[in-house]
Length: 434
Image (tube, rainbow, N blue to C red; front, side, top):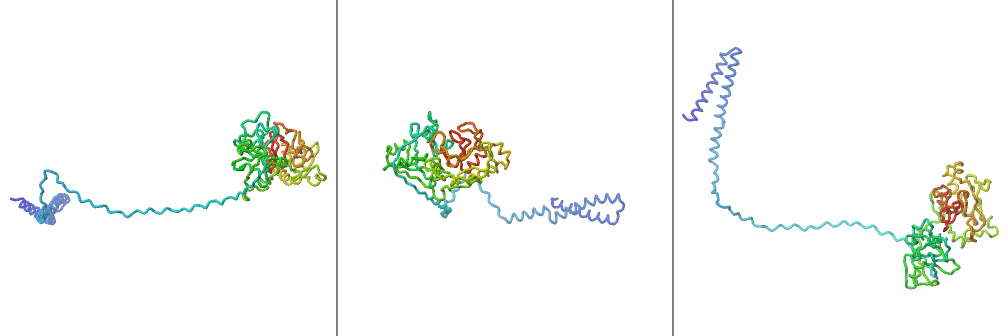
């Protein structure tokens, strides 16, 4: 018997058993116990019956027959013999690379450059005349304690290389401390055209014939008009120009433009800062600015009384005004008000700081140990608390931090406490060399 015949017989037997047993259950069986047993048998026969149905109507065996039929309709690929050596397959022909379109770099962005700043118009003042030399340890034409109009002791740092490292023995003034190998010059500067601060930070050009020397530092005011000369040169500058005393020199001085020129006064700390004449100018041409205190009627025409916000004690008396030159009056009034405000308008603080101790303003006298007029003679100087700030004393009450000093200096007045020979009681409306 073949396998297919066996499958057919088993299928017939399962089908007959399933149908017959189902008919039997429908008509003969009852009771719970018998129903459970028959349910189990019926479940087994049901599974077997559906397996038979699946086989004959769509089984995996029938699918294998279909596979064989399909396989007979598709030609099979021939089996190639295994080569004894590798087969050399020629490479595909090389094709020339397809050229890429030329890459055009993007045009650089053009950033417009800002227009150059408009040049500052700088004019030049030219002076031509005879010259001499000055400055240095061996210059006996200047006093051992003589200073410089454009440099005070605390301003030496503004002029690197211009001064000797040590003060020459037997001298105290900066004129003798100048380095004779440096390039510096003194002229009769016009401070309205070239303010002191401008001259401190700008150089001049000097020439003699075809010889030109640049970068010469203004450092002093002079020479006196009575000499007939236009400039005093450093010994090194005289040598560089090939000159000797009495030779002709040309000095070219840059002038600030209208936009950079220092105004006659500028607001500083709430005060009007005045540019007062230098003491050198006062001594050589005082009548042009303050007038001549020896002339008839000068006091009545020029001196005024400025009220002080607090009472002042002088020579055991109480005064409420200060006698001063009219050209300084408005400035002094502002300074006194500023001191009063800074002290909180408190009389006890004024007294504690000794600002109520007054030692005078106008007195027509010469300077100590000199025949030249004192600044007091022109009515442009004041003295406060001489007892604690004595003349020439290195120890004094007032300091750069004192309210009185700060307010006077903010308005452009000079405090004598900065001088090499200190006069800490002294305030004056003129810048001076020590």
